[in-house]
Length: 161
Image (cartoon, rainbow, N blue to C red; front, side):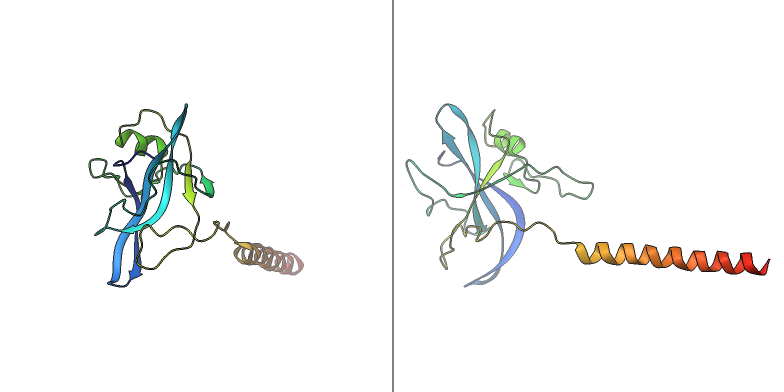
């Protein structure tokens, strides 16, 4: 792990012992021998406590899942590169801000059990793909109803004429 190099990703409010606090995901580069470093998302930290004290020192093994890079959209907040605060998870851009010319093209998100009052708080489960089946069903049945209505209107006009 490259100690002293860290960035924050996102803007998220969590409930802590001190109340609601703003924070983000702590991103730290992890060395991999001859391969380029990989950015590791260790979990949520409050803005008031961005210390790396609870991160392991020395050789480290982490378990999690790989997350592909994000791309900024039309309404994405601009990244604050000098403050190392990012709103788009782009490993290349974050790595460059940390002084790393080359990093892996993905981010490793650490999975684990959070310990109350200890930061960072890791992700607790794998991400779930969106389940839009109800919206799809309503859309297609709505379109079918419109087609049936239009057909009935057309047929009625045709029979009268």
